[in-house]
Length: 516
Image (cartoon, rainbow, N blue to C red):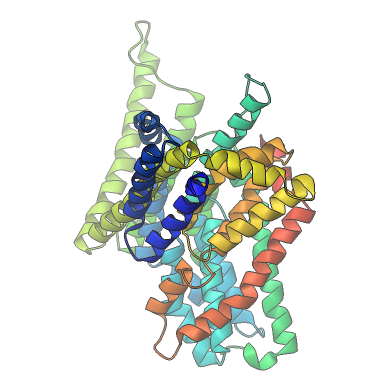
């Protein structure tokens, strides 16, 4: 019995989480309990927990993870600014007369919101309150409508930027370095957030294409499920479409462009996204368009000019021209700050800012608490021999590297029914990923396959988060059974998406290879 303490520990964790106890406390409590049990049984030295302080310090000083609260802020601000309403209304009138057009609109809006917010809950709730009633009034099958909203909302986890990809990049980078050390290579390569973002972009768009193809095909086979929608306001013109789409697209280009071009780190780009979202929200709440436009222009000019001609006023040989350029930069910064402060003031007056801060703190605290407590769990799990057991299981799988990867993907998929993506990423992947990389799998391609698999965990009952979000936002006539039935075809489409990326690995590796 003592030799299976590691497996019993994992089983106890799942029971603790499913009992409804707060996740971070469940993880830490299980780990501490089994650490003392292993010490009493003589299979684990308690001194191993001395490494815990170093692990916690490593998480708290990880610059990559600082991007998480900034991206969360960006997403919450855009959600509170009601950007989704404009997008859904415009895209619905643009595609509404097409059979399945409303469904296509929901998917496209989900993709745009995914790339500009990355917050699954915000996207699902917004579309559940806006798009779902419209689809039901049009005559859409309630199950299909529910599945569309849930699935489109989960695109925020695979289309960058997203919190899943940030956490996954950190885990995969550590796993890649560990694999290289075990190969005897001490001049190691790393994986950056930018590489993972670049690798996820084309597969994310591939999933969007798969969803759209399914909706259009269903319109041909079962036209009664996706009838054309009336467009009371008429088809929008090019100017109206551009006005609705341009702000989120500009923000996407600014954030992802800065990361992929190497101009900014993910944390710096996330701060650009947060500031951009605040300015967009300010414009929506009535701040002077001239001030917003001047602030955006000033900040863009400052960013480009400071990169091309940096000013260092502390140098002893600073001349008059440098001081003059510094004064110009200062004026540009003041104009940008004035626009941001005006937007923050308006958001505060409209009772938006308080909700943004509270939600950002809540989500960020939940994520970081889970990551920190997972460090405790993984340390004890390794101490009980779990790492060696996982490596042995993978290496003994029939089919070699392919068989091991199939086993790992099935395990992640099954655990997604019960565990959150953060828990799977920070507890299980550090054990699986190094072994799979040692077997020869490309780390970026492997990360994208796992990301799509983890995205599916938002859809799989009974604990799929998208299902809970939609249950809270859906009209009362939508039953829980209809929501579960609605996501079933899209879970199969997720498996199709994994199979496509598996068969065509260049979809995940081409862009990172080109850019980096």
